[in-house]
Length: 373
Image (cartoon, rainbow, N blue to C red; front, top):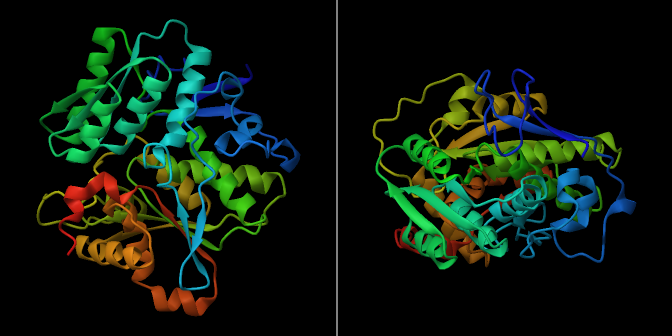
């Protein structure tokens, strides 16, 4: 197959699903293959992200593992130029299903005799990996921190996965998961490191363009922690720009919380000096040192993007306002709309088209949403 996993930083070719980080420099891998995007290649009779399978990596074009993910709707708000991409309409209630479907398809087409998989996650990715492992007939172990939301823990267990709670930082959760994968002879599929996971996220960009009849929005806002969606959007829009199907890459704005602003600080070159380390209501945005931080900064700057931060108070208000529009988003997802809401008057007056990517369903964070009165 004409694809390679190449270290983003030193260029070393990595062994897929075995070398999940570069043994030379410790960097993450990037999935490299020839992409020739043509509308004629879209399989329009397939109502999922797999309508674009001919534009994905060769290892993802057969024996597809799918639960029907993708082709999510776009909802126009009361403001005529602001739209919502409802990524929470997904098999497990979050955008992570695109990455999981791509990852498991490639894994089973690439590696023989997979015994099982191990993932570390604050919740949504863990639930998604557990679901797709079940669909693929594989054992799975999901490692999470002690602050995992009850609804997400229940969801992981519902798919038959073994949930392991680790006391310590988010980074310690990841280290424990990686060690257990080696001990058990399982494949570590950590979504924050996986280039195959990011490949699935490209389809969000493809869909936005196709659904907009190739007139892409002027601006896109999305929540960011590990950065898989951010990097997937950049890659996907680049494919479309190269193909001449769009004339610009939208201004992409990554949004984080004041409690976990790793990308904001690295991108802006500032330290916010937070006074406490209490958990944010946005429980899915937990990474303080995301593995792809340097890559995110470089890629976002290369396309003229930006990063903003919002407070928990702003997120609570965003959740409420979204609800009054008929949109039930979990707080980690509403982070993106909180940034839009802070400059709503200016954005509406500008006439620019604005797309907000809502990544998770409200039912996944019921206990957190009890704080929203």
